[in-house]
Length: 236
Image (cartoon, rainbow, N blue to C red; front, top):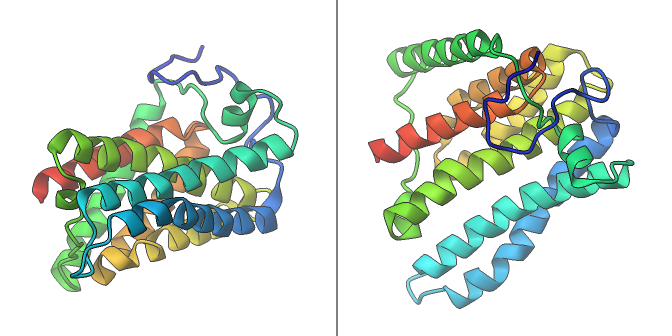
């Protein structure tokens, strides 16, 4: 019997076998582009209001842009699921992978962490020490930084990249190619924060896709994503 290890109001049992999506690769990729575009549009007012003469944004501007991005990553996947027949909020989240997961998922979470850390260590030792731009200070006080970086971003990105994108790709592609595409796009779209961090982020996105399929839920990935971002926030 499934055990609820998360506070989210998620489905106890999937309505269909994995993948739970029914929109396919084309809709998934178009949905990602729409999510990015929606996030940009939603963030424009804050960027205009918060623009400074030196080109930087005020705290209000940075927070507004980040919230707009997160909103785009949430709204578009939910709209796609609704357009494809999900009639209730519960059904929408179910199609996007928000399911309760079994305790056995813990071993897959541990394996995911181990695989990612192994790659990160080898990458740092043999290639280059990855560096990312410190965006936390732009969000002001610590509680806001935690909310945006350690909570909002992981939830929105997992729903978009794993629930919508990977789920849609898996309708037609096998596991590894679908995970490589979803993980690759996830990493590349973080290039603005630091190009040397892209390869580890691609691997991170890849293993989170595999974790989603192994556990049948994006919740374990959300938790690991939150952990990763929390560690990064504390290290800055």
